Length: 345
Image 1: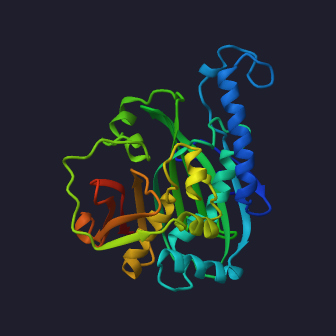
Image 2: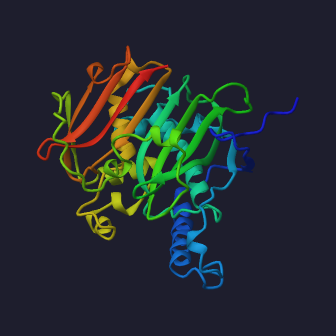
Image 3: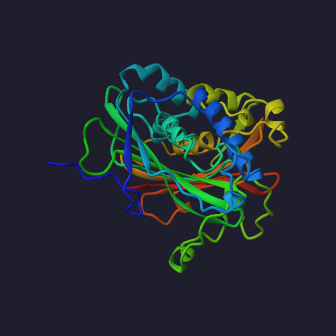
């Protein structure tokens, strides 16, 4: 029996490319920097041979995502015990042999990054702004399981400051093409200054009322209509928080590592990884989330390091039965850093 073709959420057939192992992020970032430079040069000098297309209208050509899905099978987890313990200790996750959804994001993230540094990916890795994540955990993944990881890009759409794109990653039991994945994550990014085809009216109706740019680490006006709830916790994050999460995640983006390297990218100090804050909020929910749950997060103002984050994690912040909402904010400035939900499936 022939397996069904892989498709995007919009039904577009994907060509599958199999890789032998999950790639390392260090090499991917080097490729991403080079690719970002080529894209920037091509937009600035579109008629220059090799860099541009030789045509002055190159910069106005519609953006097209690669119709490729990357796949790595035979991903073993039995040797990850020490790494998992380091992650659990840092994120305050309960000690368990079950891999939490945030840890699975760490496992799959390099393959999604490999999609973004391909030569046919039209957006630059450098400067991408992380807007949101939507994760579905449909069953436990345990130490010792052998997995298959998949990744592709889809849903390129307009944003008032550029374009948004979704990077989709899936984790399944190795060799199992039936049914839904055990874990599925959609990471949404903003590339500023680019133009995508305008959506139809139905797509426009689905646009959130709070724009992604205002959730994306850019200056945003104080939300006068929002009053923070009573906090259930307070995180005191030291200056090394970014380096500590980089050590377990492999994500050594300079904006997270030191004030000096962050200033080169326009930040006054190093900022915490968005997925560190989201994963720590998930950890605060603890065992109450169960084995199957949906986990969402929207990012707003970045967390400067060192810094203090007031956090509320409680059922009252969601209307979903048995679910938990969470929000983190700067108490002094009254601005949100992130918000999301953990709800049962």
